[in-house]
Length: 341
Ligand SMILES: NC(=O)C[C@H](N)C(=O)O
Image (cartoon, rainbow, N blue to C red):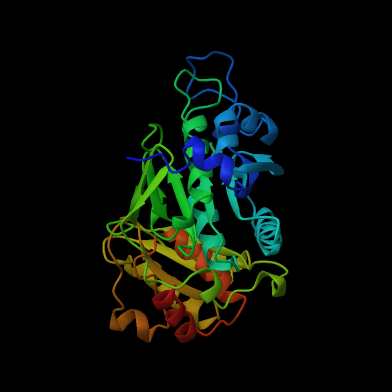
């Protein structure tokens, strides 16, 4: 396959201007020994060091770095999300930025990716990347992942897809790709339909496009959003109770995502708690703990005012529900959003 940025082409064209916005994670992690891949400090290496470690990206793009945060992604808050969203939108609105790469911890990378997918108001490429091994490891995956993420963000192919996730040679849609392995470098998998293509060295090869609305086609505008409402996820299981439903409502949750068994199964006692929560004005989304397939809208759920998560995982349903609740708390209007985004 032809190298898209061969040396003779490179001298004749101006390189795309890509900003690397760093949030932390293992890609910016350090261990004491090169053999340590699970014991390390995430979110300690600066964005400039990440860029310096991959000098080859200078031949792909005119890169600059911005340190938005340096945290393990399991510590991410909605405040960080909102600040990141504002930062990304501001940079993309400027003529001096052609695309953005976000370096992020992998634990909640999929949530940040979907949040930006729904709130970025630009067609310019936004690529989110992480790593499963710290920067100090033998065969660290961060440098190649970063190189390919920059190549993808610098490419015209990446425009108009919304936020793309690029890890381990796979390009996935932010809507449909999730971490599905705790430890190995091939941790990210797309849902049954979410894999869009591959990175072949620095060349994106894309086969698909998501049909669901995103970025400029959504109703979510962060300039109008001061904070995000509390939405809790409750994990369903056999012999469940309503105790955690009641605790969530008492703690002030405006929405509850129930990660049910199978096709949105809910333990009877838990259901009674959720019906009471819905009557009290809390929006309940019926989702599944399975991670693949959709939760169909069932009469008992719709009559109780529950919303079906469609095929969103509970953690992605939580992101959409938080944003939806900034617009309305009408369950039927929110169901429409779950069918649209
Ligand atoms: N591989 C990783 O990035 C995991 C890390 N705990 C994080 O999400 O920050």
